Length: 232
Image (tube, rainbow, N blue to C red):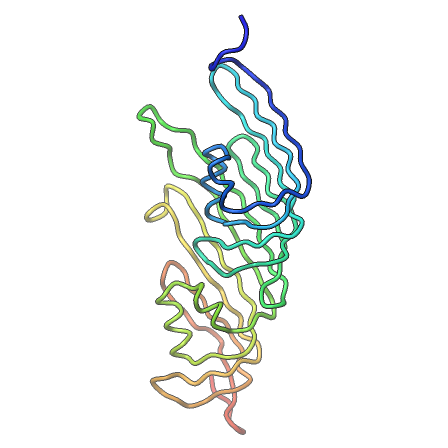
C-alpha cells in the first residue's frame, strides 16, 4: 500500500495564458505530442489537463483554448496566425475547432482524429480521421505556393495565376487509404488572371473551379475574358 511507480493516480492541471511552442513536445503524452508536432502551435493558451491511471493505463483529458496562436500544419504548411478556438483530447480522440488569419483573411480549421492503441507487438495502428482547412478571399502569393505540394505549386505557377480565391484543403487518414492518408484541395477562382506558360494568351476576370484529389487535377467551368472575347 502506498505510492510507487505503478500506482494509480489522478492528476489535474489548470493554467492560463501559457506560452507554448515546440519545446512542449517532450512534456506531453505520446498521443498528444504526435499530433502537436503536426500543427506546430506557438503562442498563448489556456490549459486544462486531467490524467488518470488505472491498472497501468493512462486516460488523458486535455482541453486547450487558444487565445492568440500561430499554426502550421505539416501537410499544408500555410501559416495561420491570431488563432482562437479549442483543441480537445478525450482519451484517444482529438478534436480541433479553430479560426485564424492568413494573409489578412479568416481561415477555419476543423478536424477530428481517433488514435488507436498499440497492438500486441507494440506497434500502434493507423490513425483515423480528417482535418479540413477553409479560407475565403485569399490571395495567390508566394506563401501559398510554398505551402503546396511541389507538383501542385508547379501547376499554379505554369498557369501564372494571380488574384483571389476560396479554398478547401482536406487531409484524411485511415487504413483504407493508400499509404494510410490522402489529401485533396478545392479552389474556386474569383476574379483571377491567367496566362498559361505553354500558351500565353492572357485571361482576366477568370472564375471557375480547380480540384486536386490524391494528386489528380481537374479544371471545370473556368471562364475568363481577353479584351472583348470570352474564353472557356
